[in-house]
Amino acid sequence: MNRTAVGVVIMAVLLGLYLWATGYQGYVMIFSGQPVLIVMGLALLVLPVVGAWALFRELHFGVVSARLVKQLEFEGNLPIDDLPHTPSGRTVRAAADEEFPLFAAEVDAAPESWRAWFRLGLAYDASGDRKRAREAIRMAIKLNKTDKS
Image (cartoon, rainbow, N blue to C red; front, side):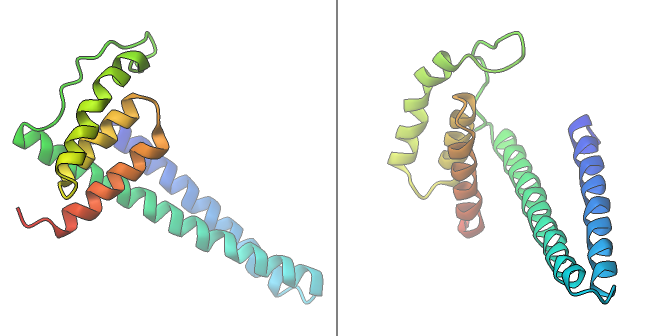
């Protein structure tokens, strides 16, 4: 198990404990018999449900996107990261922005290709646009579910 996976497991366990403690506190408040605490307890029970859903969604995204990276790597279709990086390890945005049109054109040419969408997501990420990167990778995951190749 690599460092990233260990970190994810630790954070997921800690979040799970926090959600359990929050749900337990809500349960205790509901059975206090005091109307204000009952309402607050019911509100506290919403947090663990939403938190568990968000945790599952993020873990699922991570697992599936990691599987797609491995598949692209196996096929030799994973883009080579030869862009310059800052001392902190981030890609130099100007260099990433120069390569971005290549990946956008690939999606325009084959909008049904999960591989093209995934590479576009990596290009968005290199350009610093995390929101669009996640959207493109989600599209790749969706297309991969229906891909028969």
